[in-house]
Image 1: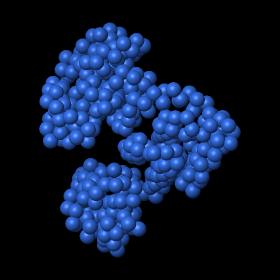
Image 2 (image 1 turned 30 degrees about the horizontal axis):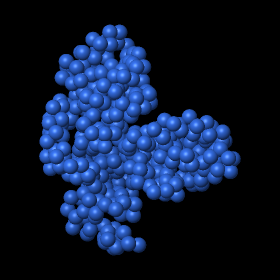
Image 3 (image 1 turned 180 degrees about the horizontal axis):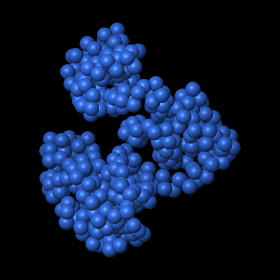
Image 4 (image 1 turned 60 degrees about the horizontal axis):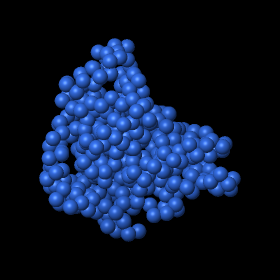
Length: 395
């Protein structure tokens, strides 16, 4: 395959930079020097981070990463080469938003002009359009190629130091983990949704590592170990058929939380919570698949991960080619409650969890779970829990 011609074709179609990467990583250093505006804002755009991501990439998957200033990069493997497509942006420049980001990162306002010049110099593309054009190019060069799936990556690398730790210790960690009979048992518990035993098994696995002298999951490089463990349990959850969107939300949130932990005890606590939450999601998926009809299972899964949006039963009915009244009756018959009450219950439950586990302001939580009117949210929450969100947070 003429990889240069392939890259040129994509570049011309999308008016975007396309970089073929072989085993020689010099091109990644050149990419960093040319396109990385600021490493604190774009940790995944460094040559080291990109090298790690490319080594971890699977065939027939297009990955998209987006940095803290909403600049995106797509990469995939085709033939003997990895290809970097980008950087590009998906939204118009927002001066207020960018100034806020600079303030959060404690960067001088003097960066704002150069940031605007950098951002506005990049092509404006949609993920969908970019994916489809690349697929067309792949098929034109290799008609028998399988279709590529598309995956957005978030929260995978927080900074250069955590990446270094990950690379330095990954082999040691996997060697340690393979020594124990707990591994397959533990991962099978996740993929089967065994919420009764998975938490204790995880702690036993941790304790066993300490007693054996091989080291626990958190001794040498805590963040590295958590990152590897997160990858393992993602794979276990994928076996159950659980939506990748759900898996990404749970593990991505954990990646952000882990980065703020001050000690190993906190890491252990939040990791166990992630495992329990992910296993519970697998359990819910497996039981809903058995308990509900395919159409209701699909509706439930959609609601679960679109709580922040307006959800209309009429839209879901249209997607499934049935009438709204039919879907409404079927939903109540199978779940025991109306569609509207189900959404309210889910939103309040999600809000209650965030009130306990995050420091977000109540109005932020309100908007996140789908209530832009904070006063209305407080009223609904109080009706559900017999106390206001502020009161609930204190107990």
